[in-house]
Picture 1 (cartoon, one colour):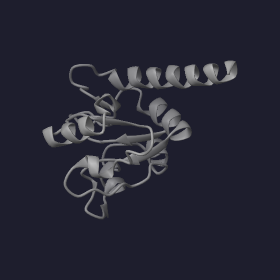
Picture 2 (cartoon, rainbow, N blue to C red):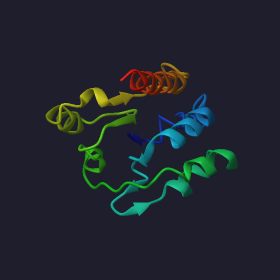
Picture 3 (cartoon, rainbow, N blue to C red):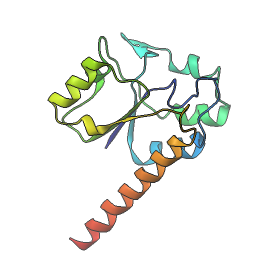
Picture 4 (cartoon, rainbow, N blue to C red):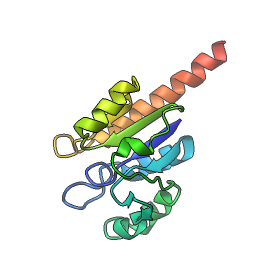
Length: 144
C-alpha cells in the first residue's frame, strides 16, 4: 500500500517540534508501506524535503525520512497520487479541488486529515489504526 505524507502540520507541529510519536510512526510506516512525500517541499521537480527537515528533526529521524520517496506534483497534490494502487494520504489541509478529485475517484476516505493542534497525539492514533489494519489483513489471510 502507498502512504503519502505532508510534512508541516502532519509530521512537524506548527511550533516546529516533531509530532508526538514521530519516531515510532516513521519506523513502522517506512518498514510496512511504500512511502512518498506529498508536500510543497517536493513539488515542480524540486526536492527540498531534506533541507527543510534538517531544521526540525534530529539525525535519528532524518535517517528514517530518507526512506520516503520524493513525489512530484504541480497544481494539486492529488496529481502525485497513484489511484491505481491502494493508498492513504495524511495531510493537514485538503483543498476543495483535491477533495473533488478524491471524490471523483471514490477514495475521499483515503485521506486522513491531521490536526495536531486539536489533538497532539493524532499521529500515534493513526499509527495504531495502521498497525491494527495490517494485523487484521494478515489474520484474515491466514483463514483463507
